[in-house]
Length: 219
Image 1 (cartoon, rainbow, N blue to C red):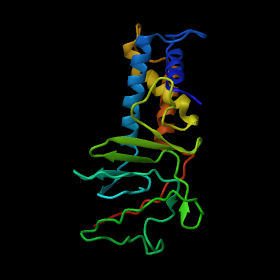
Image 2 (cartoon, helix red, strand yellow):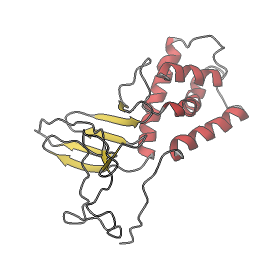
Image 3 (cartoon, rainbow, N blue to C red):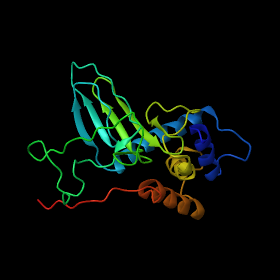
């Protein structure tokens, strides 16, 4: 599994700033880990809006939710093992979900139980859960290791919050970010430019992940 240190080294090799068998110095590692942290937040924003949920009691959220802990509340947020198959009681109601006044969508609730394939499924790779309030945290689900991975407080020898199959794509974007910070930085080579474009498409489009259908809202 690629650690942040491995991603930084690959990015520097792509920039020809590091030879085969060499290791990045402390300054390069500092710049690289900062680049990974900033890219993670940018990718989090680019993957679309979260469902905002205000809570005052213990909760097991569903995927792609932003849990806002109300001031004065001390609660436990448990990351789910399984996600409801449908976000509404009747999945065949012509796309019209029930609401709690003013059109507010009922927030789905996850479970620590098994994904039975009838009511619950496993979280999808790359989905997120964010916690704000007294405590702040951001988690990405990694299907390759079957766990929620913290996307904040990243360390050099810790895992990235992205599936291992995106390691090359992430390294290309880190190289783009580090390019002007390293000696001799400038325009990427044609090969690296193509790799950066492929990496951006891989991380944003995620063609290997199932996506929910989109229902148009005209009112």
